[in-house]
Length: 307
Image (cartoon, rainbow, N blue to C red; front, top):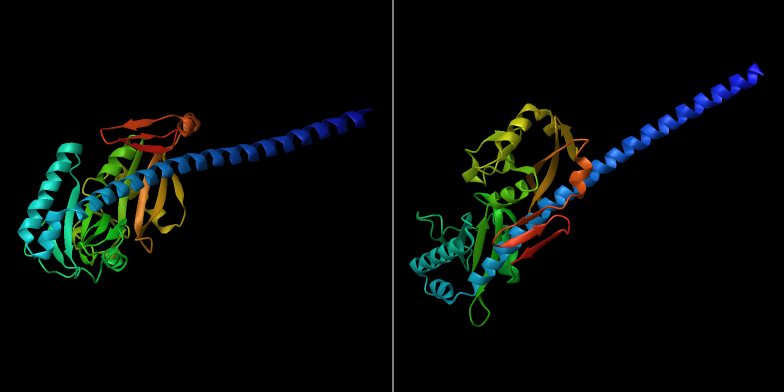
């Protein structure tokens, strides 16, 4: 009888141990799945806001490319007319949307600088073809194109061809937007982001040479998240690893690769999101809508509605 009791007790303990092991393994798996779902949803928010900014800038470039005054300025080689017209465009955009981080550049058919909204120096005729892949592509295809592109700065750049009445390429117009609006919008979803350019491109991005640096990267924006940069500076060891995300203090830090016209890996967008066992699941499934005068972004429905 004692042997039966002993065998039963051992079997019971063994079963408990096995169940405990399975439970711990399942709990760890479930937690990992929660984190993965949470990260994926937040990265979707970043990508959707990036895409919105690209489409917005592309629409503006298409609109300006049809402008007869800009066309006449190119055909008559009259820079003053082009400068006045793009200045008018910017004033109207700022009045209508309160968006101020937009620059406009007009290029000649030889891909030379013709008119810049931000530059009053003597740049007329500077050739841009050597390092601007986007410009070469638009001239070749006569089709609009938008991407994150490296030049003297790193920006979202939307380029549209300017054609004469016979469909001949006479130049192009470029809408340039930094990442400021995107940073503000993702902040509404409790996300911090910082855009970093690999310092090996600093000879091209000459306007960023004096910007703050961390590890092998240059901070692209002047108005960056100081809290996030401070956290990254405390944990520089993560830059030497090749993982998609890291758990640091109370944050999840995600490295999102950044491509130049979908070809060159030129840097990263680092996104920081809150981590906590008590609210992680809630944050995954919550509904969060951000609304302004231009569009509505609904986190639950995963859509941007332009007004």
